[in-house]
Image (cartoon, rainbow, N blue to C red; front, side, top):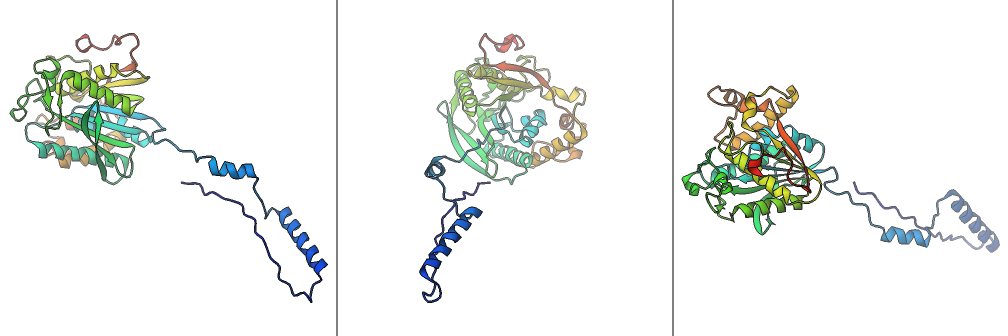
Length: 347
């Protein structure tokens, strides 16, 4: 709340007294006594010249927007963060940290741009819910390494930003979809294709372009904590995970090597946590479910009721609500090479 600036003022009183009632000398004496009494009581306070100048030239202190810290989450799809990085992201928002999430892939199994935009609307709804603010956003386009990325800032709470790159989705493995000429991040990463084109046609990326763009995002957002997906699994042995998750983690590792200021990078386990021991408290589970159901009405391909999410026909969403696991933390920056716990396949 802005502080009101109080300025002392001198008030001059002009006594108008009939000459016949008060002698001039008595009037003068009374005036002097009144001024002395008022000054003694502190009613008249004339600031010194130096104090006047200080008040005019000293700026009000400005509290930085992100003084509680900055987190940057780099994930493949519009639900990966809320399923696999929560309750950590929710806790950041509770703590008043600035939170930016980058969605690298389109999240589209060949259904088209309308479905992509619907999933993005779901992500916005989930973050608005986590913040407790109305689901109203300011849309902008920002440049990172010369490429435009659609960005949304929460209107009443600009500490939260979402970025959508819309790169082609895979089918879970190396293959893609005919709508996007079978382009995938895994094929790009393994040099089986030279570039990928964003689903909305706004940009193309080679492998080095994607690394440079993510590095530019990290540098400009300047987080003290970067989160990404599982960087411990190599392609060809996905261990039940999605190849887009692994590719995004790999590219984030490479981008992070180009950024030279102290921060940490944390990797998160994805699909396989469904079979891990439950490690969240009941209140955390309930909150994670609520966040999911803020997202799910916008995604026709996922469960949107507890009953649907508990369906045993291969549906593991409900199992993900109960768990959150990390795969390791990498201190950055890399002054002596990549730490030993990063698999050789992605160095």
